[in-house]
Image (cartoon, rainbow, N blue to C red; front, side, top):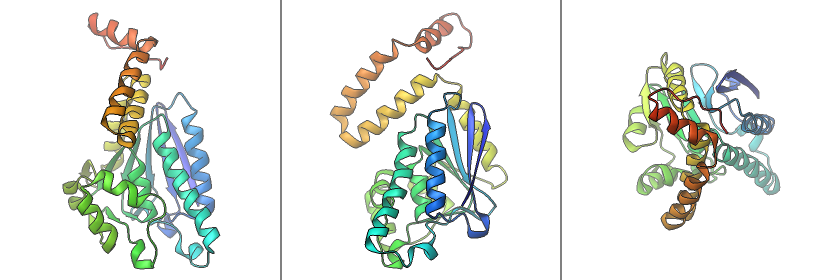
Length: 257
């Protein structure tokens, strides 16, 4: 699939660009996406990444079924490993990821959105994990991330039925943070990204690490990890600049060190 990376420092826009196939994800597309995520992770000038889909119909319609239909079990395992690697790379990236869901987010597309830190939706957005209707379970993390984002009982219902969820219901169950008219979605995502990027990049990065660690390892371990990250922040220039600026009643000039 085609993929566009647009740098608007300190923000990057990562666009799934296969609108004629509703931005469906095939092996080549996943490989390109993984490379792009890793390259952005290494770019200290980028503080927030917005992930969206090209066109006005889909964020990503999921994995390309025409490629999947004839896979052997070994090939299916490799495909799942690749999809999970992409989602894990989003979670492990130092930058927060904002999913701007502008249409269908089905199957693998929903799983990509779930891996992002924040999800914003257009009024036309539709979410689903419809894998069971195809005779398979989710393969890129949907069975694990969806119950961590929405109440587990609701997650089970959606995973077992494959039912589609519109934007307003997605907001009500906590699947998305906000819903906007389609014409406003990207600018709203940029506004949020700029708000995040204005903060200390080291602090944002450490906070993302702390949240993820706590969700994976439990409260007690998460609190211990948070203490260590809190102490580490006091070795940075950003901590000194942020607190000095506060005392001097001026805006801080964070450099990410």
